[in-house]
Image (cartoon, rainbow, N blue to C red; front, side, top):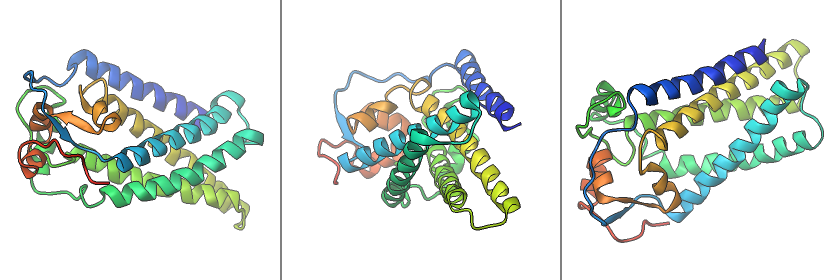
Length: 234
């Protein structure tokens, strides 16, 4: 049953992203040729984000490979890789939460972003957003929640101290929590790359163009004095 649900979930997520791109395409905005840069993420933030992503890929790859391809429980080097990636993911996620929890608090202006769905369904007007918009904030908290659920249920699965029926429930929570996590990350990746030009640059180089920042995060840019050539603090 879980294998079928996983296939349907993955296929549905990909189909939804393709449908969105076919109907709405990338976010519509016209940046000028300004070369001014604004520092958005520090080196430590980017390293932690990259580490979290790599650990997540290993976890998802080893976990779902055994379910979809091997159709057997984790064992051997796959289990070792899964467990090691889980430990790294837990540490990196905790650090990421420390970095961004304050910035991801919801504010009154976020409701405007929600009402307009961030401009992802058309329109070119600037939507109020601080360092993170409402969608990014929601994804952050969902990621923290699902990360905590999958990590704790994974630990519960590794230490079978409860009766078999409870262990089976923990296993189901782990599997379905992981499935929801992978689907949400896939949508996040699509919105941050294909659907929104310039976003991936901020996680690679740490900077964004001033016009990009003015369009996507105007309140944050205003807080930074309009533009900044000084590196973000580590």
